Image 1 (cartoon, rainbow, N blue to C red):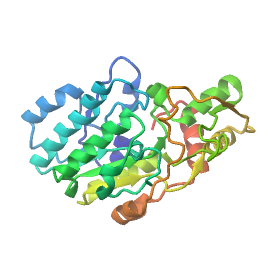
Image 2: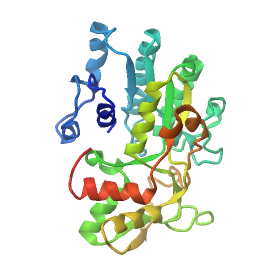
Image 3: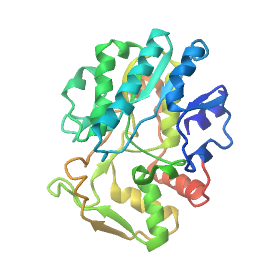
Image 4: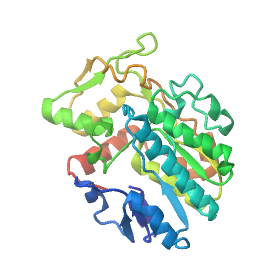
Length: 308
């Protein structure tokens, strides 16, 4: 999605770094204008040969599974690889924008304020969030946050995510459930004293808005941690109902127990504080309404099986 947006802004000399493997993920690159595709482990040898041909890094790659139990894998993939990229970019004076995560905020009891001075106080609920927090802390300790940008993405959904399996967005899962069974299943609340079933709150953000905000940081020289969200409280029932509406159907929502591997590791409330981000990128921090974005995703991409 970021490549699509950058192409629309006139950027075509893009090096894509990814392991495409044997699945259908390569289809997300169809119709995009790019210079090359390099494997994850081939990037650093390539950079040694072409150190002056790169102006900016946008590092979005990670193992994003919130239920991944292999801590060593997450540390190597999400933490150490990011360290190497940041060290290289800062050594060569290159723009470096990377994906942190709203998962670093934990249960939200300390709020969702993108303030670098508060990083040490955060307590992620899972190893994925911890692997992201570790790099945030490394960047702060090295003084990198004066020049690089860490983006704390909230609940991003939208086209090009068919390959993500269990970690795909709820909208994709809802459409599959509706087509196969005619109804949607949501988790019962694990904190019924705070939230009724289906009324747990997330900050849902359309990927087209997410990449617009991301690319905006290529146009300035600010540094630090910034939230990337809608800044709006939205419930699971609202996004499920919007999915039904986009398909021209009456909502049929049912509830099931939360899986054991998610209990205690699941954020029941997230909502981005967006003032800092709006101050950095202005109008590009504006987002479309949930009903509009869900309808665009479902009608123009999921039901037509069309990437973006």
